[in-house]
Length: 139
Image (cartoon, rainbow, N blue to C red; front, side):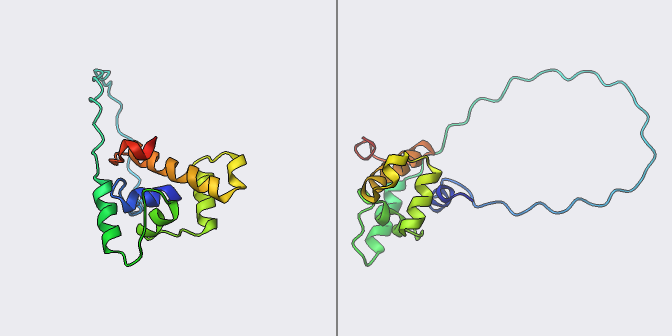
């Protein structure tokens, strides 16, 4: 699972990886069926797009922050956001996440700039995946 996928999973925006499918039953040799002409299927209209279910991320994060003994501000700090979600917030982990999300190379060398970019990008990606992130945190 991707690093960002872990974030989405913790917030309830993505289901945990499905269990591997069971191995197919061994094939038993049977005589080939007699071919019969099959009429062409009638094309169906594609199903209407399903709206993304909005998850109240703000309420979840505020609840986690209130229950945490540390004073963590997920609204401004990527480190605090990751800590609230109980995800590795080390520099190496943040660098891995930044690389996964396409952080520009010129920001990767400056941890403060990378963290600011990463925080804004993670919040935007959460919003894009159905999380209710306030507009003022995305600007």
